[in-house]
Image 1 (cartoon, one colour):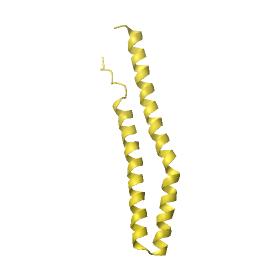
Image 2 (spheres, helix red, strand yellow):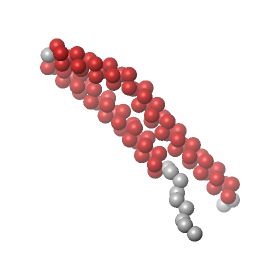
Image 3 (cartoon, helix red, strand yellow):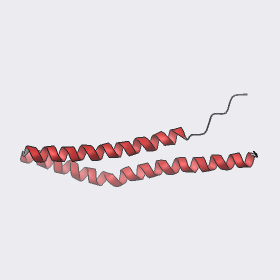
Image 4 (cartoon, one colour):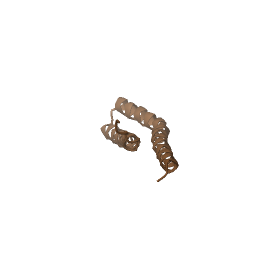
Length: 90
């Protein structure tokens, strides 16, 4: 294998690594306004005092927040799994 092929493979791997991290952060950022609105609706439902509304908004908020955290965890995990291999000390 030539040195140029190895450099090209590392470059593609690095591009995929950063692209997946950017996609994960972008997905989380896209969902943040929706999470804020759901949090506000949950707080309003708490003020009204109808327990079924409070529980419903809380469940929706937790599900969406969990989804965002899972996407970020996968993105960050793949980012670190695809990092360049350490070269042995000579």
